[in-house]
Amino acid sequence: MARGMGGGDQCIFCQLISNPSQLKLVGETDNFYAWLDINPRAKGYTMVVPKEHKESIEEFSPQEYQEAMTLTRKVVDKAKKGLDADGVSVTMNIGEAAGQMMDHAYIQVFPRFKDEESAGTPTGAIFQPDEEAKKNLDSIQKKMASVDSDFGVKTKEAHPDSQKFKKGSKTEKKQKASKKKKKSKSKKSKNKKKKSSEGGKKEAIDKIADQVEGGSPLQLGGLSGGSKKSGGSKKEKQEASQNVKSDESTDEGEEEEVRIDEDFEGKSFEWS
Image (cartoon, rainbow, N blue to C red; front, side, top):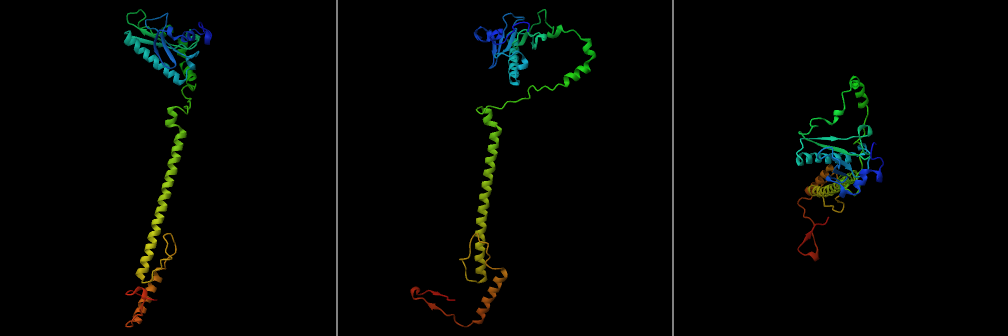
């Protein structure tokens, strides 16, 4: 660099930043200062500078670049509304060949006024038309377009203690999905058992009804809500019913033998 060579303690900007009280601040963020230069090139001439030593704007992370540009945009508002500037020029010089005067990155903000001699002159006025470049536009376009910049592509995982991680991390989402899946399976299993139990009860009731309709003596001992054993086929039930009716017609007119149990006087029971 032409001036201000040397990083750390040797950097002029780092020395200024080490004692912020001496800066003419017009704005500040977590990682950047915006101060008035003590040798102004224009009224309200402002430098937007990173607090941490970085030799070039190219060293800014995407987040830092966004933060720097947001602060720069605010300085533009301050110049137009606070100083009644008619316009503002923003310049970023990267590298000594481009006019970077310090080895500490910075962005320049130039308020512009109509009544000044330089009014209307763009910051790029030093560049005269380049006829050679005009002839080779296609070649230049191909060379620049072929470069794939990875700026802004890389992402950094949020710290486990951060709110971002707690609200939407992949690990948390997987855990929630797993819990939801287990809960659903448990619910389905309970419903299945409930239906099975209800089905078993219905089956037992149906068997009792079949026995009553068929005229057969009740056989409760063999009935179970979950049993798969059948109380007899439909054909067997019909045959049993016919046999009972036949016996009744054969013994018609004959009195049935009735025995009285002395312990239960007044009550009669049929003995088979």
